Length: 396
Image 1 (cartoon, helix red, strand yellow):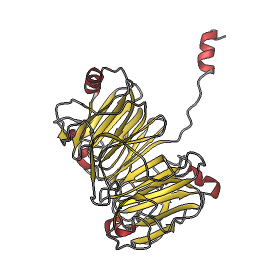
Image 2 (tube, rainbow, N blue to C red):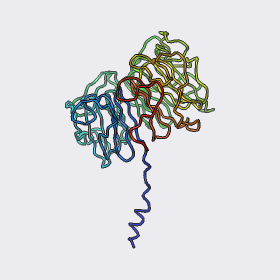
Image 3 (spheres, one colour):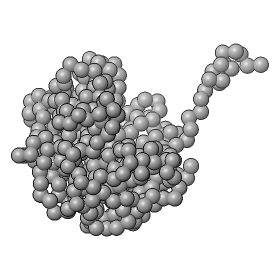
């Protein structure tokens, strides 16, 4: 008979279901992490960040690493944490604060230790990769960044753009609040406090109608000028359109706000030729039916995708290299929110579970964290399609 302690040890092990843990699309590269530690990649392999010893494109889903616990990816750099909690990076060094680039995974442990020492903390609560930088939320409620800050995304109070190459980190200036979550969208760095208030650093549009971009040198409170004062999501694209999903804290009713540049139908206001530059507000005139679940403007330029209780709807730029990225069944730019045909495997009861991940030239969708569907016509190794079709590394 096994000793009691060992029986307890085995008896309390809860199997982790095999499913997708993370999907990260950037430009024409994408990685998918599974709960068993397998990391798959496909795309141009920009700067050799897939760790294959070269920068040769991968035109099919390829297993690039195993035993991975978590991963983060900028436009040029892939950072992984293995299940033994060691860190490794690959790709463009400047995006992660280093002078040396590499096409094979190298240890990043010494720089994580340097971050602990510099920040006087003992652990990382959360991390994200921006387009050209990495940001860390530490256990002492401070935010630190490294890499290249081309639009003041470090929010360190200096008002300077920075490019770090010595492995050091820069501390952000934050208000005296408890930070719950950090994130970014293109040139804009953000965090939510524990009361769900949103703070913005770096560059964003839609704040003033008289200028395209507003630059914040330190994290600054953003509140929508409506009764829907609780911000759930805030996203912006590199060309200047911005959107937010907000909620009335008293009623729970939600509203979609859009602002910045209205080019190419990004607002969904019945035109693709508007040159309006407006303050973030209730500017869309073609909102889809149903309860708003999530919004997806973000990385791609001049377009918006909404997930509601009635389905998935999209508007905006959908031509040239971006053809098919909206998943509406056509390759033309549209100026109103249009229903996306969904795969038959995704039933009405699954709409509230839909997650969308947008790269620059391809959009990915999953409703069960097992099967991935994608849409886009750019030659990145994925299916050439203008509606969502199955495009998954593993059949689970």
